[in-house]
Image 1 (cartoon, rainbow, N blue to C red):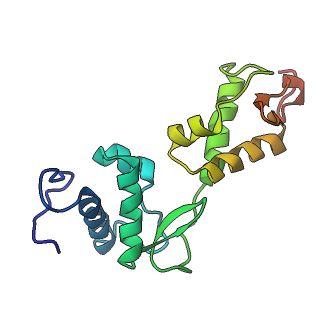
Image 2: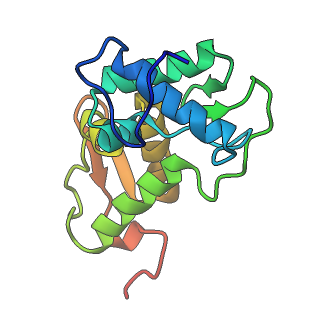
Length: 171
């Protein structure tokens, strides 16, 4: 498409074609080969960042490029998906915010984050999981609704006492 040949997994960092266009072309190739199907999630910004050793802003431009080419659409807080807006999404096993909450719960249960101690803040979790602020907030709200944490305005979110945890109290 741009007059050069891709070697899978190798980007021409010195050439005339911007890196984001090269990565978008690699994702486009996965779509055309059926590796990614309509409704499937496009690799996240964090995944692109790690897999291709690119900056987060470059990964963001990949999603924009795919949208501009009509290959993908984005739903805020959920991700970018293959196809046109309105394309039914492939069912995710577990929403990303629940996966994040699950990992925080594991850390609480292992004693890595003690009762009345703060869980990692929004910015830390955004970087750690490669997600938007709204996704982190969904995870924290989920933890709060389940009874694992409580939030003190302008201070942070803290682990509740073990007797208030939703499972196996006293075990």
